[in-house]
Length: 133
Image (cartoon, rainbow, N blue to C red; front, side):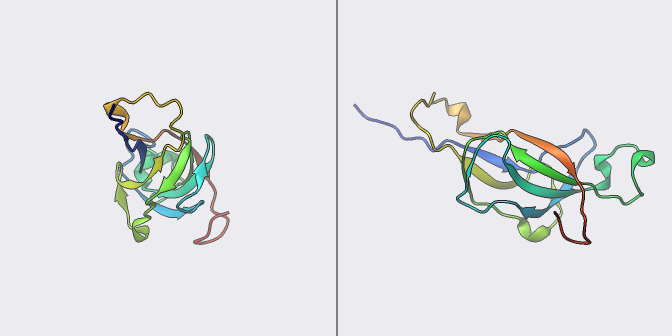
């Protein structure tokens, strides 16, 4: 019997946080490469383009760039985290991956091998100019 080993991972990408959202930049990763994650663990902070809020009348200013805290809903090990040197990135840009670390009850399906991660996002207030708390 031959056993096939499949590296199951989820891509961490810049999520589309609203229908009008187009770009974001990584302010910082909260946890380093190699960290084991569980659902609801905070992973990163993004600065989003002003178009995150569709109606300019709802923005704090015309160039308001909301900060968002993203939590993972995945369990696994963070790998290949890349902040792209703080550059503005298109929604969908890959930032790293979460490798499933428990293969005891894997239901191997070829469609599962490189899916996007699931996440939750919250507004994040920046208390200091350029820094996050």
